[in-house]
Amino acid sequence: MAQPHGRRVLSGIQPSGKLHLGNYFGALRQYIELQDRGEEPFYFVANYHALTSIQDREQLRRNTWDVVLDMLALGLDPERATIFLQSDVPEVCELTWLLSVVTPLSLLEKAHSYKDKLARGLAPNHGLFAYPVLMAADILAYDSEIVPVGQDQKQHLEITRDLAQRFNQAFGREVFALPDAYIVESTAVVPGVDGQKMSKSYGNTIELFLPEKALRKRVSAIVTDSTPVEAPKDPEACNVYALLRLFLDDEQAADWAQRYRAGGLGYGEVKQALAEAILAAFAPARERRRKLEADPDTVRDVLRDGAARAREIAARTVARARDAAGIV
Image (cartoon, rainbow, N blue to C red):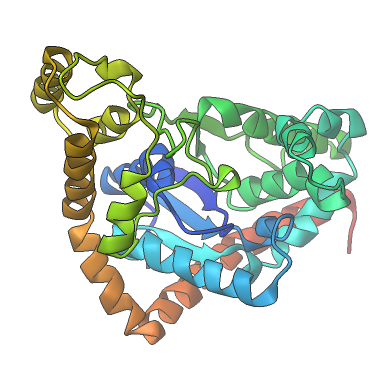
């Protein structure tokens, strides 16, 4: 069980599909770094959040299990991080309601995530609308000090801080501390196979643990232009180079860039190098994942222990909020 030592970190991953390169370079790699440098991480699988987009029982159960396996295989360590399921801490749902009574509708109407999902054609419902309040409860339940977010997710934390302040002011007590953002600066935007930002919602991902044959096929599908092999190419305009660059040091990246500009380099060769780089980088994680799949009891023990620790802290937080509000 993780022991308190550094700042308490809180972040969650939605089980809305298979984890992909964008998830790793955009978030999971930073989660591991925070763990390894001595912070006190709480990482959970946000299966309540996933209900806004998945309402198939078996799919959600399977996705949730897969994300847990992926997190552990990639290097999140239950001896140094508290790993659990959102749904194993029911106190979060009560806290969501307590925060809801101080949440202005206008604040939720301005949420980028809500507007984006409506723009993508999702039917509006209370779950989508109130999503930021549940997220705020997730963060505040564990007295989180820092929350890893990308620049495009800063609004979620701003809403959380706003709701914490509103609750404190409404009931005249400092129930919630205000968490700070830990801005995750990715080395580059992670493009999908179509050149857009890699995202499950776009269907353009390269999954971390695809079988080798399927992985090579997926990499070969990355969109490139029609520049002939012999012609010089701009590496900065190439989706394949942008992905390969994530696996290279500066000297290696410069060598590949020089080959692009010199001409004589075909995109097929770069795609092959990318597939090899992905397989090599995640080979140890693939082996750990195979072992975890064969040992589900160990995985369940991790989740049970993580939930016990998370609930212990969340219960204290909810008790403070109930007492402040006069709920007896």
